[in-house]
Image 1: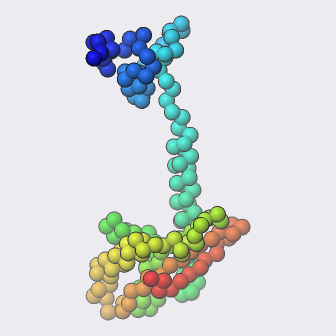
Image 2 (image 1 turned 90 degrees about the vertical axis):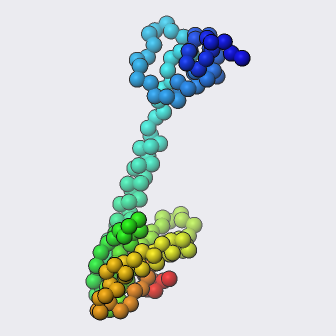
Image 3 (image 1 turned 90 degrees about the horizontal axis):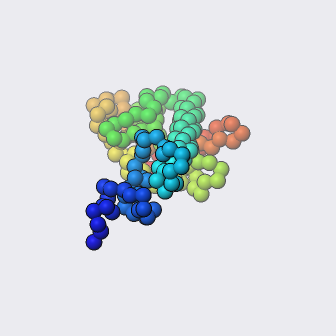
Length: 180
């Protein structure tokens, strides 16, 4: 059993670096100034972890979001070029999201947009797995129930997929109607 001098709430100068008090204070951010010169290094607070990993992750997320927006814009331009009417982009239905809702006469299209980098193991279209298809179908069915169920001009709901690759700064769109 430990003596009161070695309890977790008391830190002594002779405490080993692996003592619970040192370990606990090393993981807790300190707002106290550094110890005066001449104090032992074992008592000096450790430096806070560098924020470079977090900054890099947030930068990477921002870059991915920008690429996703560019891909969706490319698919919107592709669909408009074929005469489709764009009803909505990034439509949220509860927790679900539909990338693009388009219309071609009586057909309402729910379009999932994917993009992959050059070193990806699968294509954009191949990355739409069973679970994602199920979520997209659920979102489309909710959209139909809330918006188009009583619309006599909307006769059919279709689920399309689009894959976008950026080659030399130019978007290449692969579009699959009735993909799933």
